Length: 101
Image (cartoon, rainbow, N blue to C red):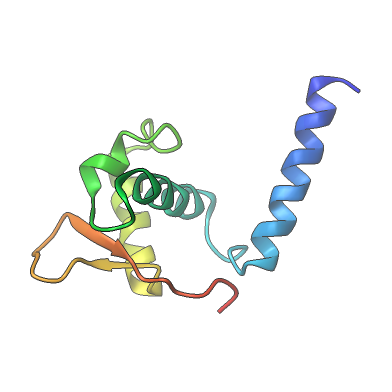
């Protein structure tokens, strides 16, 4: 099996997992940003996450500024993340929104 065949199988498995988790309706950028939030939260202990921390994650570090903020706005609207209490902007928490909802 070539490495591309292996990657194709991994991609198909990931897509199925995303569908099962209810993430298929998110754009690729929105999913990537959500993954970046979870990745940073896992490293920082799951509390507050700043947009600056997320911007450095490998998945979204090359994302255009406008795309990042459009995707961020959509994740906020859908309830995957929310502005951290007692904060005005740029610091967020994961909501624990169940996937598939």
